[in-house]
Image (cartoon, rainbow, N blue to C red; front, side, top):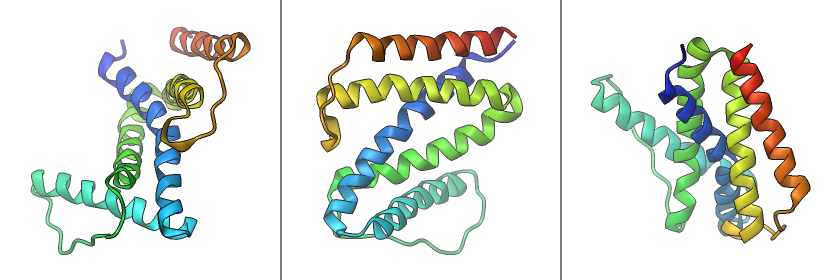
Length: 148
C-alpha cells in the first residue's frame, strides 16, 4: 500500500510547477532576461539544498547569493528544489506513472486557480465546464493508474 505522504507530496509537486513558472516570469520581468531569471531561480533552489545538507550534516564548501530581486521572485527556486527532491523520493516508492500522474493532477488543479484569478501576473482565463471536466478526467486517470 502506498503511503499518503507520497501522494500528498506528488500533488504538491504538481501544484508547484505552474506556480514556479509564474514566479519565474516575475523575476524575468525584473531582470529583463529569461536565462538570468532561470539562473537566479536555481541558485535559490541550491541554497535550500545547501541548508538541507547543513541540517543533515553533509559537508559543503560554498554558497552563492543573488540580489536586487523582489521577495516573490525568490520562491521559484524553492519550488524547483521541492519538485526535484520529491520526484527523486517518490519514483522508487510509487513508480514513474503514479508519481507523474499525481504531479499532473496537482498542476491542473493549481493552473485553474492561477488562470481564473490571474494570480502572479498570468492572463485571466475563466474556469469553465470543459476545463473542469478535463481536470476530472486527469484525476480519474490517477485513480486508474493507482488501482492497476
